[in-house]
Image 1 (cartoon, rainbow, N blue to C red):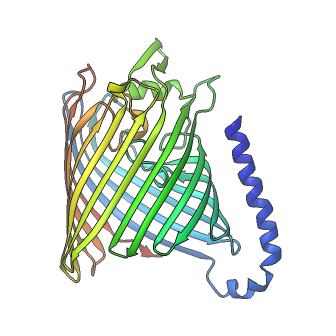
Image 2: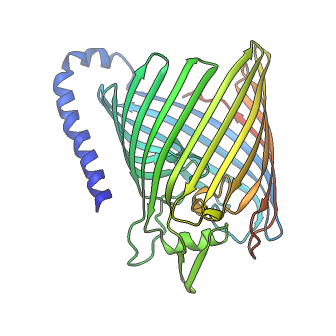
Image 3: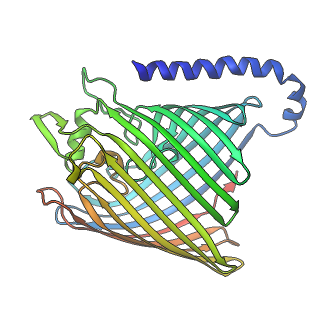
Length: 377
């Protein structure tokens, strides 16, 4: 009820303030009409991946086309549409279905953005959750959401308070609820502080509090195969043993040490305060370097160590990056051909099970990827 009321209030504010903005911005119509209302850019990526453990094995090629588009309605109101098409070819033998192999039309984001003043922004629609959450909690996917954000700028530092209410869904925007199940929810409040003295130097920080509610049976069933503790009520009904609410934080730092060398540091932390201490915490630590081999070629190498306890997160929503009940490392390398507009990269991930169970085992993943830069349509 509270979530619905918040979403309704946000939409009313957007519509009411836009009416006012249209009345006060008539002097700028001619200026706006001189500019293009619509802009868009796109990119292609091709990924080959080999993933295996004792129970599963998959080898496939993933081809994607992603589009970022923006349509300006007024000086303060615009549409942000980011669709994607995924085509997959290969084979998979797997017991989990959190992100099954299938061709799909996806939405990275599809929302109405309203900015009445520079220090205040509202958004409603399918909003990408990576903006407000760590990768330990949620993969980069869009949830139906309403978001309000207040910003303050002081020199090279930008601070923001973000409040969001969302309906956690699958990649197809389905809530996965069965008959008579209440609508699930994810409510969040977070503070962001970003310091960017130059294009190649920055320090980004965030800390927030999250609360999941009414998670459906199908999500619990899938999460059981990905590391969470779940009760089996019947053959068709499952429920989580623990609730999920707690804190998350992240920091990311890039430091130019010389004209040809940058250092990158990163960390994420997550704690589910509704679960026992020995199974409620997750973190990852990363260290990397960017070598500017020439004016048109960069090479980056990053190493990451991660630990995700069984009850730190809802495994169905973070399965693309981590799952739960996992501890391990990942190495990524990327060549960036700036003149020609594409990247070629490879990564290796090795994750072991923290607590033994019947559905998880040591997992190894090798991935090679080619990705173009975004280009104007």
